[in-house]
Length: 189
Length: 439
Image 1 (spheres, chains in turn cyan, purple):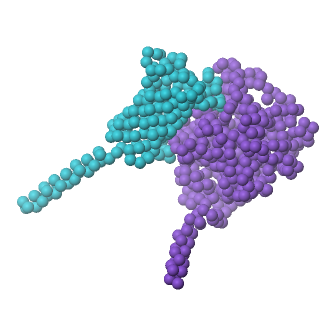
Image 2: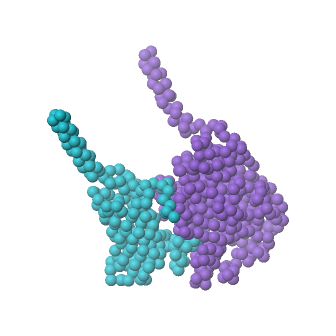
């Protein structure tokens, strides 16, 4: 009887040790970032009233190991101030490196602006034109809920518009799907 | 002897190993296992796989779904354009020729390069010739009026954004009708434009009244350096003003949608801005003569769970040709685009746009209708030089951004290619002043 309970205790201890080992291995495993993210953010300018709101999508795909590629399609709209375009679409591809929960990446964003400045860049049928390229560097982290929180610094290259110095861009990207064919869940009535 | 035997064994091994590869690349899909009158349900879609572009099949989750009911229509039905276009093709067959940079010279009317004379495999200019035939396909000299509805989709959810209105267009040159012989095909003598078109937005309320008018010029047929850019005028109701825009290129997204201007109808651009190749010929299934109506006739048509499918309709087997463009503009968003065209009607079937990294980005496809079948025969009425018009034409475009899962659907099921009935109406339509007077 005694021998039997000892064996049971030994087995339980072994299982617990194994569980700790498995849990340890799980935490050491790199995070899986792949998916489609909804992006929301803003650009503020130090000492200026200018504010741009950023909304759109980012696709993150695995490149191998801790390297990821990104596809970004966002719109930037000025909600206060007078600098830069009133609205612009930003489309580009880039890379993201994951170190633990820390993120660092770069992306080249082609801007597109409405050829009728008074019309929003998303207004239908209004031709848009290519503006400057934004060469952006991003740093940030993966939050506990999987959201990517990024601070972005960009350099404007080319003609079309300028953006004021001293701007600070922060974005949050929340994963909404693992793949493009994942249907959105309909909200309960 | 033993060396010879060894070589023989090695050769046999290579043949055995090599044959599946050859089979995959060089052998046609064989006879279809479906026939006219069959219904293809979701559990039977494997049967149609050999007759779909591989890129479409790879993304079939967007289009095929439980409950779908694809009806198989007639194979290779004749959808040739009316006699007026065919006669012009014969009459001017030897006149048109390719110029520098894939430009088109001496074009007068009809199909510039008769399709039956183009050899996709051996003619290095076949791609450019087919591209011109596509751009100058029978379009009835413009269209009197079409009602359109744009909808926006994100992984199966219809976004609270839409645009509704009407669109019109007219050919101003290259007309084969006898009344334009004296002016060499021009509607107005000495005409520099060849087409004028533009939509007018009716809804939603905050976009109501936006009107556009675009001219495309004959010089866009010439080499890149000589081509005059399109001119567009936009009436903005909130400003109560008309703004003029000279579009350097039309490769940008159509205003918040996944389409670029040049994506409409799979290709709506300027041929000499691209390098063209003919990739090959094949038989494909496509929704070619819609049986189930969409906007403006039916607003509740089933487009599948993603809102981007025509699976629930009649599909037909067609002889197709695949051409590829490679943009000459370095800042073009696409690395290349493959376009599948119906050889008989020259209507677009499918196209696939690749991003600068070479990854599939956008999938575009279309639904069509044949003017000879009800209810379209009521919409498409004849006119003086074309008493019995006939055509197969696009009545809906769908684009899917396969990277993000977003997409757009444009419906214009009442599109009629009956042109504006007289020169007076054309003159009023192409007058920029109409934009402000119209409201």
